[in-house]
Length: 112
Length: 111
Image (cartoon, chains in turn red, green):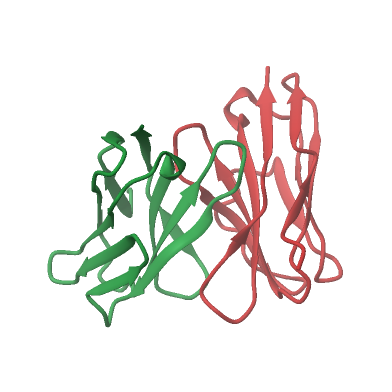
């Protein structure tokens, strides 16, 4: 069974540029999460979906961040006008009925 | 407010030794406590987990202990191996959805 896949694996931007991250969850997993993991910190939830519905986006940092999951499968996280403080690894995770979340390898973002 | 706190931030042990990582949490409604292991360049992977109805869970060389009264957990790794060198995250959840992570312990096992 394929795991959670993410792309790109790395991104380097200048401040003010936009970037999108893409996630393909494990097939059949109805719940999908996006986390931000700053260097030397634990993952922090940004948003999560059940199927195509946003369940909780209260932790999205600002209007600059948005996430969609239009067909309840793949998902895209977008940052408009990136700032240096957005430098972090962005992790996608998915799960089905149990407790365990399965994480992808992440996208490492550097904003110069 | 940090919901889950871990200590130490980093730890070095010799191969064959026992590693002990500790964790405390704030919210008494948490009822699921996973430990995740993360290698550089990879996402976290579930190592072992425990529900609040138990006080101990063992899986091979890894054992997690849970103390509900003190709101504390620990992870013990016996016969530590260089391949165990990674960052370990304690986490907690109450809703079967949102997981709160600590800031991790970087473990180095020296041969």
